Length: 361
Ligand code: KG4
Ligand code: ZN
Image 1 (cartoon, rainbow, N blue to C red):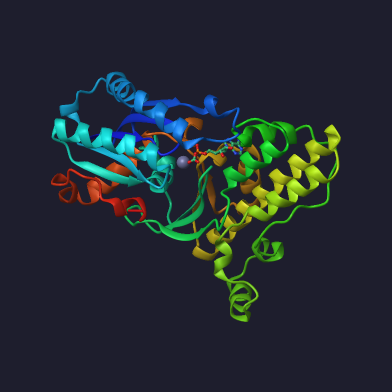
Image 2 (image 1 turned 120 degrees about the horizontal axis):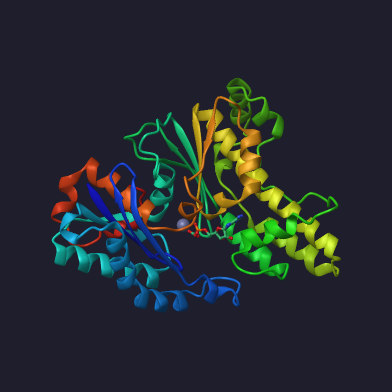
């Protein structure tokens, strides 16, 4: 079975052809990221206008590179949300039109569910050990999910209450006078740090002794005492960003201080993400932790998580860097997962169910 995936939720216009078990036959990504370097972030109207022009050539190229004709496809999968509405509409309109003319089922996919499937791309021959805890950290989202088995839908454990992790990187990069996207720029500056600075806040972080020497009896006692709640699987990065702003603007920073502030900021984000992923894994007896989304490209985050996880829990990241950031291969695979589970649901539907953008599967 072959699936065409279409992704236009942010500044990328992407199309891919993928088999149901994750073999990527083609993955084409056109990005307008360089248009956003001067603004320090994506301007929705600018992104959407680019996508209107890019969508048809990108789909055509994905089919050509895969050597696949429309009639060989099983279904079309498209991101229906969450994302920038003008951008999403372009992808959905294109997918709807394509599916109608090619007489193919159309599967609406949540962008987050796409990220959750990105670690399964190009891993057809590998065994996955469940339960799996997935940390998705991108420019728009920071979420923790639990997947109990290969056939079960992911359950949301926690999400950001304000800024996403990648968004925090982007905003701090702007504060420090760096370019967009912020993650790699902050990482490069952090690598030059020579001094340690006063620690930055790590919101709702579980106490380290509890996550390191985990035992469920102690955790249970803590939860019952009300000192910590499972709500703490939520994330907050806006206070951290405000503190960086205060330190960056109160005094003129020397180049050394600037680099050290970037390093401490990066460590605060990685510490928070990794500790919560570790605690979720411990609590649910996870055998694998998956790291997805644009921020999963961060070497600092990968290293931190690898250091925190016990040997019994393996860490998996997407097989290629291009599957960390937004791409259509993950959307095609997510659509395949949904379609295989319930093929009759999509055969008669020619329009995307708006609710699918909100729920995961
Ligand atoms: O998944 P993605 O491509 O788009 C969204 O769905 O938002 O993620 C983009 C985000 C940006 O905020 C960017 O700063 C961040 O991923 N990012 C990184 C790194 N590479 C990209 N953050 C930290 N370290 C990196 N190496
Ligand atoms: Zn994304």
